[in-house]
Length: 250
Image 1 (spheres, rainbow, N blue to C red):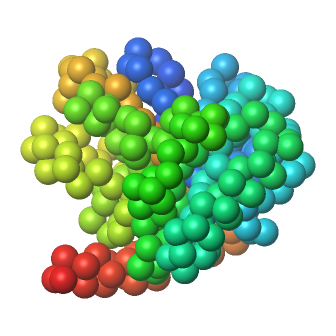
Image 2: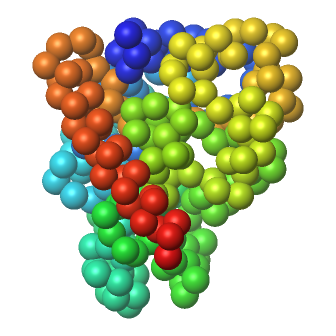
């Protein structure tokens, strides 16, 4: 059964023992206590990750942020300012700066990451066509500062590892076809684990580093939360597929 806590632990173990260079990133879109759970599992295995929190009630939880930081993980800002401010560039920058400083009252923040907001017509990364986040003491934005010619991007968007097909923004379009051609696209976590544990697999012999993104609200013990997340994500994927197809026809 995929996307359980046990499966996530198995993935971490395969990743840790693979010998590959990797960076773990988590987008805390919802259910922040799920993120605390995965943070504890990672810390118990001696692994570190970056947790990106939105500044909205369903994500932002000061207790959880402090506790995850205390485990040695990095805290980042999962910004969506152009969506929040309906495309107003000046208001979006002010919103970004205000939320960044709010997070920095809790812990150091030197990394940011765009929240996809698939139903929004605005891409918050466009903010940086007019402003410089480095001037705010930010070192890293994964979509903008990662060398994807040397780094494979793997994300559980859509509750699947090949979710770029139903994702509006959580993908790297200029490299997806090449990764697929090289056999570096997977559907299930079991397929990804099999690649990580096989020293002769296309993944292990690719020469690439890994940037792995998960959304901790998706990873649950089997039960009500698990079934609810499965059902909601299935509906979201249908909607996102429509949006992706519509965008491709423009």
